[in-house]
Image 1 (tube, rainbow, N blue to C red):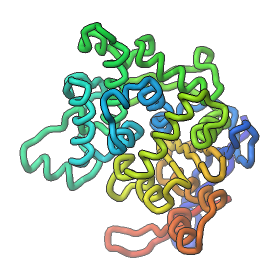
Image 2: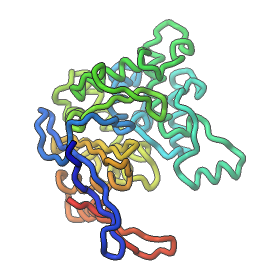
Image 3: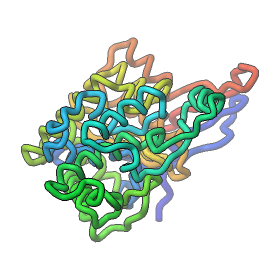
Length: 338
């Protein structure tokens, strides 16, 4: 297998100390590759980068409308959030709208990502619940979908095991991923994600296609295109819900609005839609480094999204950023190497 190119360099004292290799693809809604680097046809696990695609059945099924879900709630259904109080409250409100509580969630519990929230909880003697899980909004969306699919059946009984690949909820989610990516899931490796749902190995070329389709509606059936448009609008209005304080995704969407939807995934994966440009983006760092994938995504935004001078400076600061030690000294840089 040909080695992927070096995409990011970490410098110290003016010398390259370490490098990050990877691959990326920029694709239009017709499936044409606009630009790429590295192996974009090797299937990779996209992890949380595809939460927008996983949320499509929530809207297309009518569940979002039935439960009156607003922009905050739809945005957090696409999120890997910090577990800040507002995130927890919004995820809980989705469950309440469907007539259940956090006992229905099967994502597991972990401490919030944001340090200050962790300290406040620990000082108060509180422990995290499933609502603090970064995936709680996505899972609340799954629960809302499941409550609609249950029909007249007992909701609790129907929801049990909704994370399993054979459950009707996950079958709906898998169908949405397969339709948007054009990649047959039955023929590809399947793993288990951190929040216990299935994750499927899909090439970067196809992941980028899915986000081009989601951003433009081209190549999607009418109801699914409307669902994608609704989710994109919600994220644009409520970018805090997608990630949270200080996070790359939130900061980029806050600044660039409807021109960019970007979503990080574990192990150095990032996907994005550039709706105004009609493009989708997918990238994967070989070593799984999150710091490196943010640099690459920033560089691709700078290259493919129309920006004014101030916006270009804002984005470029992520593609070429200082490394600072604990004394606040500038000791090097993390930069786009291509």
